[in-house]
Image 1 (cartoon, rainbow, N blue to C red):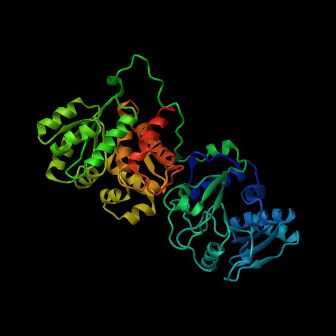
Image 2 (tube, rainbow, N blue to C red):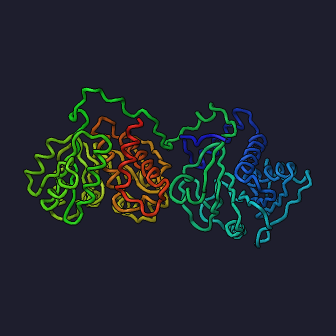
Image 3 (cartoon, helix red, strand yellow):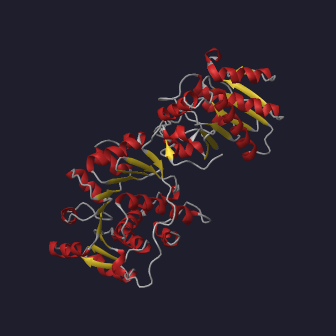
Length: 491
Protein backbone atom coordinates (compact mmCIF):
# COMPACT_ATOMS: atom_id res chain seq x y z
CA UNK A 1 0.00 0.00 0.00
CA UNK A 2 1.31 3.39 -1.03
CA UNK A 3 1.19 6.93 0.26
CA UNK A 4 -1.61 8.93 -1.33
CA UNK A 5 -0.29 10.20 -4.67
CA UNK A 6 -0.22 13.83 -5.71
CA UNK A 7 -1.79 13.22 -9.12
CA UNK A 8 -5.60 13.08 -9.02
CA UNK A 9 -7.74 11.79 -11.87
CA UNK A 10 -11.22 11.81 -13.26
CA UNK A 11 -12.82 8.41 -13.81
CA UNK A 12 -12.19 8.73 -17.55
CA UNK A 13 -8.48 9.35 -17.04
CA UNK A 14 -8.25 6.44 -14.60
CA UNK A 15 -9.76 4.18 -17.25
CA UNK A 16 -7.24 5.51 -19.76
CA UNK A 17 -4.42 4.74 -17.34
CA UNK A 18 -5.82 1.24 -16.97
CA UNK A 19 -6.05 0.81 -20.75
CA UNK A 20 -2.50 2.01 -21.40
CA UNK A 21 -1.15 -0.31 -18.71
CA UNK A 22 -2.86 -3.29 -20.32
CA UNK A 23 -2.37 -2.49 -24.02
CA UNK A 24 0.98 -0.70 -24.11
CA UNK A 25 2.80 -2.25 -21.15
CA UNK A 26 1.41 -5.79 -21.48
CA UNK A 27 0.05 -6.05 -17.94
CA UNK A 28 -3.14 -8.06 -18.34
CA UNK A 29 -6.44 -7.09 -16.79
CA UNK A 30 -6.44 -10.40 -14.92
CA UNK A 31 -3.07 -9.58 -13.34
CA UNK A 32 -4.32 -6.14 -12.25
CA UNK A 33 -7.50 -7.66 -10.79
CA UNK A 34 -5.50 -10.30 -8.91
CA UNK A 35 -3.22 -7.60 -7.53
CA UNK A 36 -6.22 -5.53 -6.44
CA UNK A 37 -7.77 -8.50 -4.65
CA UNK A 38 -4.48 -9.34 -2.95
CA UNK A 39 -3.99 -5.77 -1.68
CA UNK A 40 -7.61 -5.75 -0.50
CA UNK A 41 -7.05 -8.95 1.46
CA UNK A 42 -3.92 -7.54 3.12
CA UNK A 43 -5.83 -4.37 4.00
CA UNK A 44 -8.62 -6.46 5.49
CA UNK A 45 -6.21 -8.39 7.70
CA UNK A 46 -4.43 -5.23 8.88
CA UNK A 47 -7.56 -3.26 9.73
CA UNK A 48 -9.77 -6.06 11.07
CA UNK A 49 -7.41 -8.73 12.45
CA UNK A 50 -10.19 -10.35 14.50
CA UNK A 51 -12.55 -10.78 11.54
CA UNK A 52 -13.30 -14.37 10.55
CA UNK A 53 -16.50 -14.03 8.52
CA UNK A 54 -16.96 -11.57 5.68
CA UNK A 55 -19.84 -10.75 3.37
CA UNK A 56 -18.78 -9.42 -0.03
CA UNK A 57 -21.44 -7.70 -2.12
CA UNK A 58 -20.37 -7.65 -5.77
CA UNK A 59 -21.67 -5.88 -8.84
CA UNK A 60 -21.46 -7.20 -12.39
CA UNK A 61 -18.48 -5.09 -13.50
CA UNK A 62 -14.78 -5.09 -12.73
CA UNK A 63 -15.44 -3.72 -9.24
CA UNK A 64 -17.29 -6.95 -8.56
CA UNK A 65 -14.34 -8.82 -10.07
CA UNK A 66 -12.05 -7.32 -7.42
CA UNK A 67 -14.54 -8.58 -4.85
CA UNK A 68 -14.47 -12.09 -6.30
CA UNK A 69 -10.67 -12.21 -6.00
CA UNK A 70 -10.83 -10.95 -2.41
CA UNK A 71 -13.43 -13.61 -1.56
CA UNK A 72 -11.29 -16.38 -3.05
CA UNK A 73 -8.18 -15.32 -1.15
CA UNK A 74 -10.18 -15.03 2.08
CA UNK A 75 -11.64 -18.51 1.57
CA UNK A 76 -8.21 -19.98 0.85
CA UNK A 77 -6.97 -18.49 4.11
CA UNK A 78 -9.68 -19.94 6.33
CA UNK A 79 -12.28 -17.16 6.29
CA UNK A 80 -15.96 -17.76 5.81
CA UNK A 81 -16.80 -15.71 2.73
CA UNK A 82 -20.40 -15.11 1.64
CA UNK A 83 -20.62 -13.60 -1.85
CA UNK A 84 -23.77 -11.89 -3.09
CA UNK A 85 -24.18 -10.59 -6.64
CA UNK A 86 -26.23 -7.48 -7.30
CA UNK A 87 -27.84 -7.46 -10.74
CA UNK A 88 -27.95 -9.96 -13.59
CA UNK A 89 -25.02 -12.35 -13.19
CA UNK A 90 -25.26 -13.17 -16.90
CA UNK A 91 -23.85 -9.71 -17.59
CA UNK A 92 -20.56 -10.52 -15.87
CA UNK A 93 -17.86 -10.89 -18.50
CA UNK A 94 -14.17 -10.67 -19.23
CA UNK A 95 -11.76 -10.53 -16.31
CA UNK A 96 -14.59 -10.30 -13.78
CA UNK A 97 -16.18 -13.47 -15.12
CA UNK A 98 -12.85 -15.28 -14.98
CA UNK A 99 -12.43 -14.16 -11.35
CA UNK A 100 -15.93 -15.42 -10.52
CA UNK A 101 -15.18 -18.78 -12.12
CA UNK A 102 -11.93 -19.14 -10.17
CA UNK A 103 -13.83 -18.33 -6.98
CA UNK A 104 -16.50 -20.95 -7.67
CA UNK A 105 -13.78 -23.42 -8.63
CA UNK A 106 -12.51 -23.15 -5.04
CA UNK A 107 -15.88 -24.30 -3.73
CA UNK A 108 -17.42 -20.91 -2.89
CA UNK A 109 -20.96 -20.55 -4.17
CA UNK A 110 -22.13 -17.10 -5.19
CA UNK A 111 -25.74 -16.07 -4.67
CA UNK A 112 -27.93 -13.44 -6.24
CA UNK A 113 -28.72 -10.64 -3.79
CA UNK A 114 -32.42 -10.69 -2.97
CA UNK A 115 -32.89 -7.08 -1.85
CA UNK A 116 -33.04 -8.03 1.82
CA UNK A 117 -30.70 -8.01 4.78
CA UNK A 118 -27.16 -9.22 4.40
CA UNK A 119 -26.00 -12.33 6.27
CA UNK A 120 -24.26 -11.97 9.60
CA UNK A 121 -20.56 -11.24 9.28
CA UNK A 122 -17.69 -9.51 11.05
CA UNK A 123 -17.15 -7.26 8.02
CA UNK A 124 -19.06 -6.31 4.87
CA UNK A 125 -17.32 -5.40 1.63
CA UNK A 126 -18.72 -2.99 -0.95
CA UNK A 127 -17.73 -4.12 -4.45
CA UNK A 128 -21.01 -3.12 -6.10
CA UNK A 129 -20.41 -0.06 -8.27
CA UNK A 130 -17.12 1.33 -9.50
CA UNK A 131 -15.94 4.74 -10.65
CA UNK A 132 -18.02 4.66 -13.82
CA UNK A 133 -21.28 5.54 -12.06
CA UNK A 134 -23.00 8.61 -13.52
CA UNK A 135 -25.93 9.97 -11.54
CA UNK A 136 -27.86 8.24 -8.81
CA UNK A 137 -27.76 4.57 -7.85
CA UNK A 138 -30.68 2.69 -9.38
CA UNK A 139 -32.38 -0.70 -9.32
CA UNK A 140 -31.28 -3.46 -6.98
CA UNK A 141 -28.13 -1.54 -6.15
CA UNK A 142 -30.19 0.89 -4.05
CA UNK A 143 -31.23 -1.94 -1.73
CA UNK A 144 -27.66 -3.25 -1.59
CA UNK A 145 -26.28 0.15 -0.61
CA UNK A 146 -28.87 0.52 2.13
CA UNK A 147 -28.19 -3.00 3.39
CA UNK A 148 -24.45 -2.32 3.57
CA UNK A 149 -25.05 0.86 5.58
CA UNK A 150 -27.52 -0.81 7.93
CA UNK A 151 -25.55 -3.98 8.60
CA UNK A 152 -24.05 -2.64 11.82
CA UNK A 153 -20.51 -3.89 11.16
CA UNK A 154 -17.56 -2.10 9.50
CA UNK A 155 -17.83 -1.42 5.76
CA UNK A 156 -14.81 -1.85 3.49
CA UNK A 157 -15.22 -0.25 0.03
CA UNK A 158 -13.18 -1.35 -2.95
CA UNK A 159 -12.04 1.46 -5.27
CA UNK A 160 -14.90 3.85 -4.33
CA UNK A 161 -17.98 3.78 -2.08
CA UNK A 162 -20.92 2.82 -4.30
CA UNK A 163 -22.99 5.89 -5.11
CA UNK A 164 -20.20 8.46 -4.81
CA UNK A 165 -19.39 10.44 -7.97
CA UNK A 166 -15.72 9.84 -8.72
CA UNK A 167 -15.17 13.14 -10.54
CA UNK A 168 -16.86 15.55 -8.14
CA UNK A 169 -17.33 13.94 -4.73
CA UNK A 170 -21.03 14.70 -4.93
CA UNK A 171 -23.88 12.33 -4.08
CA UNK A 172 -27.10 12.22 -6.08
CA UNK A 173 -28.96 9.50 -4.19
CA UNK A 174 -28.04 6.58 -1.96
CA UNK A 175 -24.37 6.10 -1.12
CA UNK A 176 -22.29 3.68 0.92
CA UNK A 177 -20.71 5.14 4.06
CA UNK A 178 -17.47 3.18 4.31
CA UNK A 179 -15.10 2.91 7.24
CA UNK A 180 -12.17 2.25 4.92
CA UNK A 181 -11.86 2.74 1.16
CA UNK A 182 -9.07 1.21 -0.91
CA UNK A 183 -8.40 2.99 -4.19
CA UNK A 184 -6.43 1.45 -7.05
CA UNK A 185 -4.15 2.60 -9.91
CA UNK A 186 -5.22 6.27 -10.08
CA UNK A 187 -6.70 8.23 -7.19
CA UNK A 188 -10.01 9.84 -8.19
CA UNK A 189 -10.33 13.51 -7.35
CA UNK A 190 -13.86 13.20 -5.97
CA UNK A 191 -12.72 10.99 -3.09
CA UNK A 192 -11.05 13.98 -1.42
CA UNK A 193 -13.59 16.79 -1.61
CA UNK A 194 -17.28 17.56 -1.00
CA UNK A 195 -18.96 14.36 0.30
CA UNK A 196 -16.02 12.17 -0.67
CA UNK A 197 -14.12 12.11 2.64
CA UNK A 198 -17.28 11.39 4.67
CA UNK A 199 -18.19 8.47 2.40
CA UNK A 200 -14.67 7.03 2.15
CA UNK A 201 -13.68 7.01 5.80
CA UNK A 202 -9.98 6.18 5.91
CA UNK A 203 -8.62 6.39 2.38
CA UNK A 204 -5.86 4.00 1.27
CA UNK A 205 -4.20 3.81 -2.11
CA UNK A 206 -2.22 1.22 -4.06
CA UNK A 207 -0.96 1.73 -7.61
CA UNK A 208 -0.96 -2.03 -8.34
CA UNK A 209 2.59 -1.70 -9.65
CA UNK A 210 1.50 0.29 -12.70
CA UNK A 211 4.69 1.39 -14.50
CA UNK A 212 5.67 5.00 -13.94
CA UNK A 213 6.00 5.38 -17.71
CA UNK A 214 2.29 4.59 -18.03
CA UNK A 215 1.43 7.28 -15.49
CA UNK A 216 3.43 9.84 -17.50
CA UNK A 217 1.23 9.11 -20.52
CA UNK A 218 -1.91 10.32 -18.70
CA UNK A 219 -1.37 13.95 -17.66
CA UNK A 220 -3.71 15.56 -15.15
CA UNK A 221 -4.33 19.16 -14.17
CA UNK A 222 -5.51 18.27 -10.64
CA UNK A 223 -2.93 17.73 -7.90
CA UNK A 224 -3.18 16.77 -4.25
CA UNK A 225 -1.52 19.54 -2.25
CA UNK A 226 1.67 18.35 -0.62
CA UNK A 227 3.76 21.16 0.85
CA UNK A 228 7.09 19.95 2.13
CA UNK A 229 9.55 22.05 4.12
CA UNK A 230 11.64 24.05 3.70
CA UNK A 231 9.33 26.83 2.54
CA UNK A 232 11.54 29.58 3.95
CA UNK A 233 15.24 29.61 4.51
CA UNK A 234 16.53 30.37 7.99
CA UNK A 235 16.55 34.07 8.73
CA UNK A 236 19.89 35.84 8.95
CA UNK A 237 20.84 37.16 12.34
CA UNK A 238 20.99 40.75 11.06
CA UNK A 239 17.40 40.61 9.75
CA UNK A 240 14.97 43.46 10.41
CA UNK A 241 11.21 43.82 10.11
CA UNK A 242 11.40 45.64 6.83
CA UNK A 243 12.63 42.48 5.11
CA UNK A 244 9.53 40.43 5.79
CA UNK A 245 6.76 42.39 4.18
CA UNK A 246 4.19 45.02 5.07
CA UNK A 247 0.61 43.79 5.16
CA UNK A 248 -2.41 46.06 5.26
CA UNK A 249 -5.75 44.55 6.29
CA UNK A 250 -8.82 46.58 5.33
CA UNK A 251 -11.98 45.79 7.24
CA UNK A 252 -13.73 45.79 10.58
CA UNK A 253 -16.94 47.75 10.14
CA UNK A 254 -19.04 48.49 13.20
CA UNK A 255 -19.61 45.28 15.17
CA UNK A 256 -17.18 43.26 13.05
CA UNK A 257 -13.76 44.25 14.37
CA UNK A 258 -12.97 40.67 15.43
CA UNK A 259 -12.66 39.44 11.85
CA UNK A 260 -10.10 42.09 10.96
CA UNK A 261 -8.16 41.50 14.17
CA UNK A 262 -7.95 37.76 13.50
CA UNK A 263 -6.62 38.37 10.00
CA UNK A 264 -4.00 40.77 11.34
CA UNK A 265 -2.81 38.46 14.09
CA UNK A 266 -2.62 35.51 11.69
CA UNK A 267 -0.43 37.59 9.38
CA UNK A 268 1.88 38.41 12.29
CA UNK A 269 2.00 34.81 13.53
CA UNK A 270 2.95 33.68 10.03
CA UNK A 271 5.94 35.99 10.03
CA UNK A 272 5.00 39.27 8.37
CA UNK A 273 7.32 42.11 9.42
CA UNK A 274 4.66 44.80 9.82
CA UNK A 275 0.88 44.52 9.87
CA UNK A 276 -1.46 47.49 9.72
CA UNK A 277 -5.24 47.64 9.93
CA UNK A 278 -7.44 50.21 8.24
CA UNK A 279 -10.67 50.22 10.21
CA UNK A 280 -13.35 52.35 11.85
CA UNK A 281 -12.41 55.06 14.35
CA UNK A 282 -14.39 53.23 17.01
CA UNK A 283 -12.21 50.11 16.70
CA UNK A 284 -8.73 51.48 16.17
CA UNK A 285 -7.77 52.22 19.76
CA UNK A 286 -9.45 49.07 21.11
CA UNK A 287 -7.46 46.80 18.82
CA UNK A 288 -4.26 48.67 19.64
CA UNK A 289 -4.91 47.89 23.29
CA UNK A 290 -5.73 44.19 22.90
CA UNK A 291 -3.01 43.40 20.37
CA UNK A 292 -0.49 46.27 20.38
CA UNK A 293 1.65 44.68 17.66
CA UNK A 294 -1.13 45.50 15.15
CA UNK A 295 -0.86 49.06 13.89
CA UNK A 296 -4.57 49.73 13.96
CA UNK A 297 -5.41 52.98 12.20
CA UNK A 298 -8.67 54.85 11.65
CA UNK A 299 -9.62 55.11 8.00
CA UNK A 300 -12.81 57.09 7.62
CA UNK A 301 -11.52 59.56 5.01
CA UNK A 302 -10.10 58.80 1.59
CA UNK A 303 -6.81 60.48 2.45
CA UNK A 304 -6.36 58.20 5.46
CA UNK A 305 -6.78 54.99 3.48
CA UNK A 306 -4.55 56.25 0.67
CA UNK A 307 -1.73 56.94 3.13
CA UNK A 308 -1.96 53.40 4.53
CA UNK A 309 -2.17 51.78 1.10
CA UNK A 310 0.95 53.62 -0.07
CA UNK A 311 3.06 51.96 2.64
CA UNK A 312 1.77 48.42 2.08
CA UNK A 313 3.31 45.61 0.03
CA UNK A 314 0.19 43.44 0.12
CA UNK A 315 -3.42 44.30 0.93
CA UNK A 316 -6.00 41.94 2.43
CA UNK A 317 -9.46 43.40 1.97
CA UNK A 318 -12.74 42.02 3.27
CA UNK A 319 -12.59 40.65 6.84
CA UNK A 320 -15.50 42.30 8.64
CA UNK A 321 -15.71 44.93 5.87
CA UNK A 322 -19.48 44.98 5.52
CA UNK A 323 -21.23 46.42 2.49
CA UNK A 324 -21.89 49.97 3.59
CA UNK A 325 -20.87 53.10 1.70
CA UNK A 326 -17.68 53.11 3.82
CA UNK A 327 -16.95 49.53 2.72
CA UNK A 328 -17.52 50.38 -0.95
CA UNK A 329 -15.09 53.32 -0.69
CA UNK A 330 -12.35 51.23 0.93
CA UNK A 331 -12.87 48.36 -1.50
CA UNK A 332 -12.52 50.73 -4.45
CA UNK A 333 -9.34 52.18 -2.96
CA UNK A 334 -7.85 48.71 -2.63
CA UNK A 335 -8.76 47.80 -6.22
CA UNK A 336 -7.39 51.07 -7.58
CA UNK A 337 -4.08 50.63 -5.73
CA UNK A 338 -2.97 47.97 -8.25
CA UNK A 339 -1.14 46.26 -5.39
CA UNK A 340 -1.33 42.49 -4.76
CA UNK A 341 -4.65 41.74 -3.06
CA UNK A 342 -6.21 39.01 -0.98
CA UNK A 343 -9.96 39.40 -1.48
CA UNK A 344 -12.24 37.75 1.08
CA UNK A 345 -15.60 37.93 2.81
CA UNK A 346 -17.62 41.08 2.09
CA UNK A 347 -15.08 42.25 -0.47
CA UNK A 348 -16.09 39.18 -2.49
CA UNK A 349 -19.74 40.16 -2.17
CA UNK A 350 -18.86 43.60 -3.51
CA UNK A 351 -16.86 41.98 -6.30
CA UNK A 352 -19.94 39.95 -7.23
CA UNK A 353 -21.57 43.28 -8.08
CA UNK A 354 -18.55 44.79 -9.86
CA UNK A 355 -17.33 41.77 -11.88
CA UNK A 356 -13.73 43.01 -12.13
CA UNK A 357 -10.98 40.87 -13.66
CA UNK A 358 -7.39 40.94 -12.38
CA UNK A 359 -4.36 38.68 -12.38
CA UNK A 360 -2.92 40.41 -9.32
CA UNK A 361 -5.11 38.96 -6.60
CA UNK A 362 -6.05 35.85 -4.65
CA UNK A 363 -9.78 35.30 -4.10
CA UNK A 364 -10.83 33.11 -1.16
CA UNK A 365 -14.58 32.41 -1.37
CA UNK A 366 -16.55 29.84 0.58
CA UNK A 367 -19.31 28.08 -1.40
CA UNK A 368 -21.89 30.77 -0.64
CA UNK A 369 -19.63 33.56 -1.87
CA UNK A 370 -18.63 31.45 -4.86
CA UNK A 371 -22.30 31.03 -5.76
CA UNK A 372 -22.83 34.78 -5.70
CA UNK A 373 -19.73 35.38 -7.82
CA UNK A 374 -20.89 32.82 -10.39
CA UNK A 375 -24.56 33.87 -10.14
CA UNK A 376 -25.66 30.36 -9.30
CA UNK A 377 -26.58 28.36 -6.18
CA UNK A 378 -24.52 26.81 -3.41
CA UNK A 379 -25.90 23.42 -4.46
CA UNK A 380 -24.56 23.90 -7.99
CA UNK A 381 -21.14 24.92 -6.67
CA UNK A 382 -20.93 21.92 -4.36
CA UNK A 383 -22.17 19.54 -7.05
CA UNK A 384 -18.93 20.14 -8.99
CA UNK A 385 -16.38 22.11 -7.00
CA UNK A 386 -13.65 21.55 -9.61
CA UNK A 387 -15.66 23.21 -12.35
CA UNK A 388 -16.70 26.01 -10.01
CA UNK A 389 -13.17 26.97 -8.99
CA UNK A 390 -12.04 26.85 -12.63
CA UNK A 391 -14.94 29.08 -13.68
CA UNK A 392 -14.08 31.57 -10.94
CA UNK A 393 -10.47 31.75 -12.11
CA UNK A 394 -11.56 32.26 -15.71
CA UNK A 395 -14.11 34.92 -14.84
CA UNK A 396 -12.15 36.95 -12.30
CA UNK A 397 -8.52 36.05 -12.97
CA UNK A 398 -5.68 35.52 -10.52
CA UNK A 399 -5.59 32.64 -8.08
CA UNK A 400 -8.80 31.31 -6.53
CA UNK A 401 -9.21 29.36 -3.29
CA UNK A 402 -12.57 27.60 -3.00
CA UNK A 403 -12.83 26.81 0.69
CA UNK A 404 -14.60 23.80 2.17
CA UNK A 405 -14.09 20.09 2.67
CA UNK A 406 -11.17 19.44 0.35
CA UNK A 407 -10.34 23.09 -0.36
CA UNK A 408 -9.35 23.75 -3.97
CA UNK A 409 -6.81 26.24 -5.31
CA UNK A 410 -6.91 27.08 -9.01
CA UNK A 411 -3.89 28.90 -10.43
CA UNK A 412 -2.39 29.01 -13.92
CA UNK A 413 -4.62 26.22 -15.16
CA UNK A 414 -3.74 23.78 -12.36
CA UNK A 415 -6.14 22.86 -9.56
CA UNK A 416 -4.64 21.84 -6.21
CA UNK A 417 -6.61 19.99 -3.54
CA UNK A 418 -5.91 20.19 0.20
CA UNK A 419 -6.91 17.01 2.03
CA UNK A 420 -6.21 18.34 5.51
CA UNK A 421 -8.52 20.20 7.90
CA UNK A 422 -11.49 19.09 10.01
CA UNK A 423 -15.14 19.96 10.75
CA UNK A 424 -14.12 21.87 13.88
CA UNK A 425 -12.93 24.59 11.53
CA UNK A 426 -16.53 25.27 10.52
CA UNK A 427 -16.75 28.24 12.85
CA UNK A 428 -16.65 32.02 12.59
CA UNK A 429 -13.31 33.64 11.92
CA UNK A 430 -11.51 30.69 10.32
CA UNK A 431 -11.62 32.29 6.89
CA UNK A 432 -10.23 35.55 8.30
CA UNK A 433 -7.27 33.63 9.71
CA UNK A 434 -6.63 32.08 6.29
CA UNK A 435 -6.73 35.52 4.69
CA UNK A 436 -4.09 36.81 7.09
CA UNK A 437 -1.86 33.77 6.54
CA UNK A 438 -1.94 34.07 2.75
CA UNK A 439 -1.33 37.83 2.86
CA UNK A 440 1.68 37.32 5.11
CA UNK A 441 3.19 34.64 2.86
CA UNK A 442 2.69 36.79 -0.21
CA UNK A 443 4.31 39.77 1.53
CA UNK A 444 7.30 37.59 2.46
CA UNK A 445 8.03 36.90 -1.18
CA UNK A 446 6.08 33.80 -2.18
CA UNK A 447 4.35 33.81 -5.54
CA UNK A 448 0.57 34.02 -5.77
CA UNK A 449 0.32 30.27 -6.36
CA UNK A 450 2.75 29.33 -3.59
CA UNK A 451 1.22 31.77 -1.10
CA UNK A 452 -2.23 30.29 -1.69
CA UNK A 453 -1.03 26.68 -1.62
CA UNK A 454 1.22 27.00 1.41
CA UNK A 455 -1.35 29.18 3.17
CA UNK A 456 -4.21 26.72 2.71
CA UNK A 457 -2.00 23.80 3.75
CA UNK A 458 -0.68 25.65 6.81
CA UNK A 459 -4.16 26.80 7.85
CA UNK A 460 -5.65 23.31 7.56
CA UNK A 461 -2.69 21.69 9.32
CA UNK A 462 -2.93 24.21 12.15
CA UNK A 463 -6.62 23.39 12.48
CA UNK A 464 -5.83 19.69 12.74
CA UNK A 465 -3.10 20.34 15.31
CA UNK A 466 -5.38 22.58 17.39
CA UNK A 467 -8.16 19.95 17.38
CA UNK A 468 -5.84 17.16 18.46
CA UNK A 469 -6.46 16.18 22.06
CA UNK A 470 -9.18 18.70 22.94
CA UNK A 471 -11.39 17.73 20.00
CA UNK A 472 -13.03 19.44 17.06
CA UNK A 473 -16.21 20.73 18.64
CA UNK A 474 -15.71 24.15 20.18
CA UNK A 475 -12.56 24.91 18.16
CA UNK A 476 -12.08 28.67 17.81
CA UNK A 477 -10.25 30.52 15.06
CA UNK A 478 -7.93 32.07 17.65
CA UNK A 479 -7.00 28.56 18.85
CA UNK A 480 -5.01 28.13 15.64
CA UNK A 481 -2.48 30.86 16.44
CA UNK A 482 0.01 28.77 18.49
CA UNK A 483 -0.05 26.01 15.87
CA UNK A 484 0.43 28.48 13.03
CA UNK A 485 3.53 29.86 14.70
CA UNK A 486 4.92 26.39 15.43
CA UNK A 487 4.26 25.03 11.96
CA UNK A 488 5.66 27.99 10.07
CA UNK A 489 8.88 27.54 12.00
CA UNK A 490 9.21 23.91 10.93
CA UNK A 491 9.99 25.10 7.41
